[in-house]
Length: 111
Length: 113
Image (cartoon, rainbow over all chains, first blue to last red; front, top):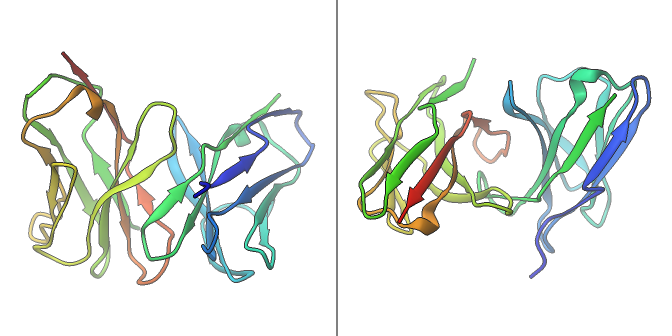
């Protein structure tokens, strides 16, 4: 069974640009969550989508947004990138509460 | 707000040593508690969980007991192996049915032969 797939794995952007990250969940999983991981703040919850609806949202500015498609694939977008947005962005899919299956992440560097 | 505090690493142990990684939490209500593990080159994965006070989660020889009186969920293993080398994360969820977890900062464990 294929795991959670995230693309791209690595990307470099400059301040002010925007970026879109993609996540394909495990087949049959309808919940997709996004997390930001940084050395200083650790893992922080961004948002969760379930059946194309945002179910929960973390404490991030409106520049961070996401969506989920009918096939459960999800994208997150960060607009007007700042240096502090450099991080590993992790996607996780789930069938049940708390049992998350994480992808390997998309590492974003903002110059 | 909700938070998780776990012991700083890194932790280095010899094979067959006893492992404890401390985790304490702050939360309103009755959270569910988790330990996640990240092996080298792999994504985070759930190791064990406990959903109510006094529950014991266990998996792969690891155990953790939900202690409400001390707000703790310490991870233990009686005899570690080289293959247990990984980063361990304690986490909590304060919303039933949701997947917005609060994670600790992670503890890197290295087991030497």
